[in-house]
Image 1: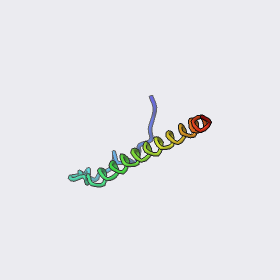
Image 2 (image 1 turned 60 degrees about the horizontal axis):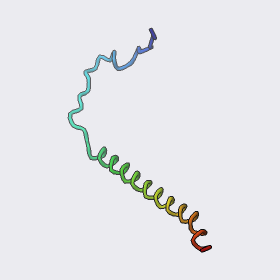
Image 3 (image 1 turned 30 degrees about the vertical axis):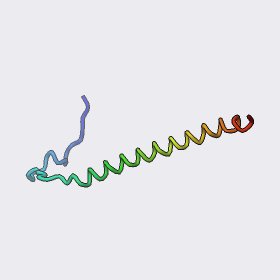
Image 4 (image 1 turned 180 degrees about the vertical axis):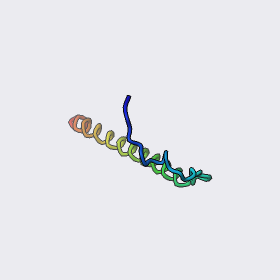
Length: 65
């Protein structure tokens, strides 16, 4: 079994435990919304790059007629 040196950790504090009564959710929602927008923007850039790559491959074949 592994041994851990937990001397001095909060497990042995004599202070009473801190109870969080209210969690501010606005910051979490804002961070989550920003992550969603970054994902959507990345997907859009990837789609545009894919269309440009396909046009670059097919374009010369169309122009040669």
